[in-house]
Amino acid sequence: MVKVEKDLFVSVEYTGTLKNGDVFDTSQGRQPLEIQMDAGRLIKCFLLI
Image: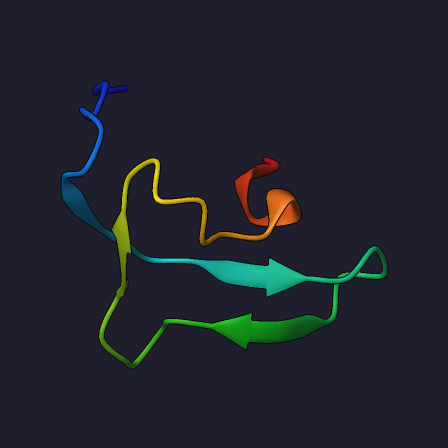
């Protein structure tokens, strides 16, 4: 894993799933989500693995 510095932008490919395994959102087939690090704009559960 690479540590990213504050204020840099990163691209994230993701798939959001419910506890039962159903997919509710994904970047598959679309542009990855672009995030500015440490900007406080992500929901907390996005960071859970």
